Length: 375
Image (cartoon, rainbow, N blue to C red):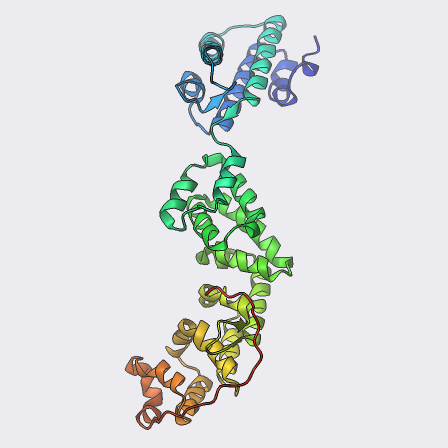
């Protein structure tokens, strides 16, 4: 018999070396080892032998079902498979692992062909975990937008399926609500091991290197845990940081109107302290504050006050000059920015704060857009 043509290619690759060397007992053991791997991979279990079979196929709600598991006949078929598989380990594998049994080709062919039949049966079995059903739940409009719900949902993913689910959800990210996906991805990254994190970041980095879609960048900035920004490929990181800085340069906020230009950068606020292009970022923000157009200044006050506060801890001489000049001109926005700061910051503006007299400014007449902002 030409066994190679009769069995699954994967199985043949596992037993080929032993079989062609006429080590038939070894080939039989190899086939059962492969059978065990098939069961473990499909069930996400790590046990072996009878325990593996019982956990994967036994009980009232088996992890793996070989039929619809609804009728008495279905139950009996499932139960029969459990007995057969247990017999494989107890009658065939174990004796060959603990004693010197010398099998001939005929016995090896018979057993390996039966193992091949079982592998085909298990390949076609249905797992409790359905990727398609799970993805629908991730994008469910009723997804509860909080950490607890996301944690419970992510916990349902079998360990060996986590990366597969990441790829499936990530590829469809722009069809979901970004604020909900943020919770999902945060919890998923928390469960990733180092290798899974590396592979996920490689996918994200690859997209950030080339995407021209601001929407795509927005989604990535929202779903990627901020702490992982420095682990994004450097060239991708610098490209997006530059894109964000350009968005800040374009930014304008319009008082008494819920509109803003430079909307993309407003999705990156949490990342600013991790930027490699920090010097360029600081210069851009100070340029906006130094603008004669109030809408540009308001853009910084409205969206980047936290980062501006961090800049004030060790203020640049230009920033000190900008704020001092604004205080002298009676600009209440700058006074509000400084007045409640610690003395270590207020000392730079002691004279200006003491002599401050508010001046009323007329609103600039400017056009406005309806770009997307996260507020």
